[in-house]
Amino acid sequence: FARARRMLEVARATTFFGEICSDATTLGRTNIVYAPRGFHADATVAAEIDGTAREVAQRWLEVAREQAPARRDAAARLVRNHAAVGRFALRSSGGGSSCQESEAHTNVLDLALRLVTEVLLSSDALDVLTDGALAAAQACCDAHGTEAAARAADALDALAFKVGVPRDMAEESARAFRSHLRLVVEALRQGDGSHL
Image 1 (cartoon, helix red, strand yellow):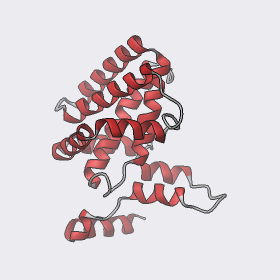
Image 2 (tube, one colour):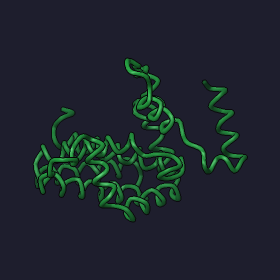
Image 3 (cartoon, helix red, strand yellow):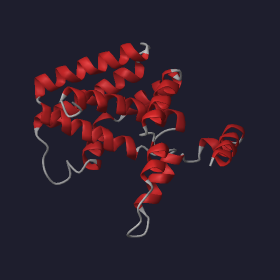
Image 4 (cartoon, one colour):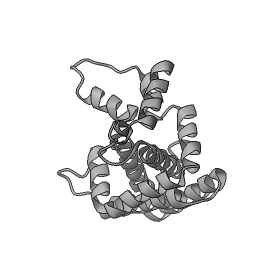
């Protein structure tokens, strides 16, 4: 896999195709969705591809913190289409389709998406950023309840898996978006006590 990954990275960097090709997460998720019945993905490989393995998630976040243009692009796309992104996140997590979400759940998701935008645009060091996200998430839990915070975390987590390259944004922007979504998800889950 290492040789294939290097080959794809070089091809993306040196050809016009790099701007229109998909990334491993998008391809992997698409393959899982359309896989034959009974297919079970290797959880370890899927976690590495999706950026959910602890080391990979940390690396993606650290790299994204150095890529201000990618973070700004992701934030701009979120702000430009905020309401639709929120509805898509709810549907992706199994809510918001036929049932009407409570006002508390909708408000917390809105706050969580605003927090994602804030952390994407922040130039703070990662430890300061993480502490700020935790404080904001705790305030959100205190004001709106742990159930609403947990539902918002689930919606953002599902959204991180559904961001498509190149449909939604370029690969660097998508990785920045996914990693900052997961930063807020983790903060919300710590704020609601589900990781204690």
